[in-house]
Image 1 (spheres, rainbow, N blue to C red):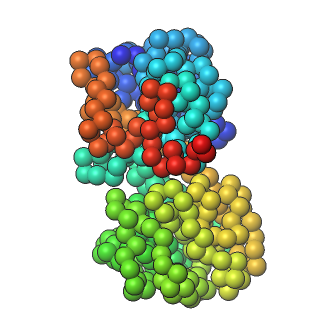
Image 2: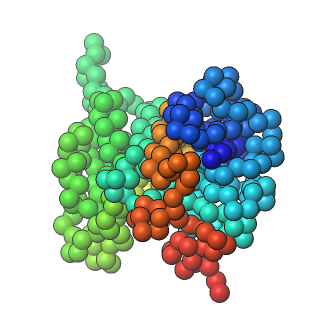
Image 3: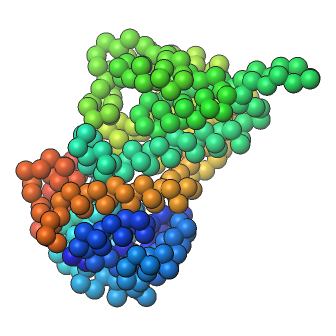
Length: 376
């Protein structure tokens, strides 16, 4: 089975789907691996490293994709890329299908059997394949570093000859993987950290990484399973808004990470809440890829509103490409090795992981939530 790793084409994307460590492992498992020239350079993996472990270096995309059985990527392919894919090939990448319906339709039209890593069920068995968690860890870590650079004060408490400097107060909204990593990183930098989540059962996790839990008692559960949250009732939203307003007004840094179902970013911080915050404080909106948790955020941009700097970065994992690629590569390798035997891919739709990750197959869109968005 020939695996093809093309160079990523989306602006700002520095990661590569497979690193040499994984290529060596897959070749030992019976795969052929071809990678496009310079595909790994921006993440620190040159062509020579791939050649040393047995990969073939393709000079261009056309020669790479010729006779490819499985195409491995990091980001969503463009329509132009899909046109170059061999009909009936397989694709493994992150498609975020409900955000990219036209791309999903193009894959179906080309009869590509596509799997989206962000649709893999978040189960114990699938943990090693979970690119969402791998990248969210990086997002939470890097988000706090951005805050520390931009905040016009220290994070830690310092005792100096000129007197004591009190620690910054950091408030983290959302305690999924990104939120927990943000809490841990802010705590390591010496900040006083508070955190909230609509799922009260994560209180223990929040406290285990060094933050004080703050929250409201919900009238109905907001847990959606798989580590995800669902939308709150109108009554609970009103009570949550009041709590968020109080915490934001008292904080130096607010880091938001909340996503509904891992995709949609609810608007939790209104323009009115921003106005109550201290001049010079910072909001890091880590849900910008999903539209942002702050009402005035501009995804991909930094703005100042009412004296508050609001940073809404996109694709933060691409700013740590060496390790982001390494973790992504390990996730894809786990997927391939789990479902390939005797050099063949076994598409068993009774398997919950394959069934959940499958987006298009045999010319049809198979992903239920995406199908619901396609107009008849």
